[in-house]
Amino acid sequence: MNLVEIKHLVKTYNPEGMAVHALRGIDLEIQEGEFVAIMGASGSGKTTFMNIIGCLDTATKGEYFLNGQEIGGFTMEELAQVRSERIGYVFQSFFLLPRTSAIENVMLPLLYGQKKKHHEMIEISQAALDRVGLKERSHNMPNQLSGGQQQRVAIARALVNQPILILADEPTGNLDTHTSYEIMAIFQELNKMGKTIILITHEPDIAQFAKRNVIFRDGKISRDFQVTQIKDARIELEKIPPLEDSQ
Image (cartoon, rainbow, N blue to C red; front, side, top):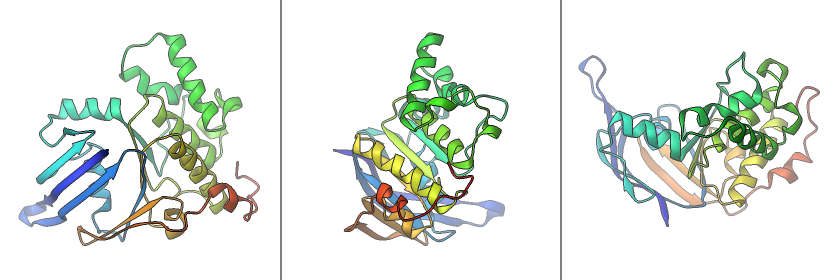
């Protein structure tokens, strides 16, 4: 079943009256349970594509179906609801609230989503932290966590609303190699549990942890292929000694 279906997607910006063609007719289908890495040089259109998939932007032309429902004609309020209820986001810069504990950061989407009792939100948030290996760090502040641990908190936050799609935009961009592989191991485990993941990365070695690679160039898809030798992040971790502050 196609979870994401894109038909003839076009995005054109008009800064100062000059047309900039970010996407030039994208056709793409992503099935439920896939793990797809989106790659491409700066200006290739991959970030614009991710923003549209994530309902952070809208297309100029074309159709976008999420779980069989056309999203293209949604209002800004309806798009916000889709973001809140169906999509989990993980970004390069973590975007954790600095004066808020790990568990409180994870809990944030629940505060804006369906109404739950406080103890239920605590239980759900703690379970998400447990899943990413931070059982004992729930009351730590972000500045008490390493970069890898902060990114794990961000992943836990993306999971609490049980999204049907996880979007990860350069999630290893600020991390060393060992910590990056730890994060990719978490994504691989989530994918094994059935989560659909779309990952943007400029790193070929990170893309090899996904099952499928889609390469963007000049606003179009230049290549789309299944990864024949998928790397296991847990195995790759054993080959790289961790840095002293990598956790």
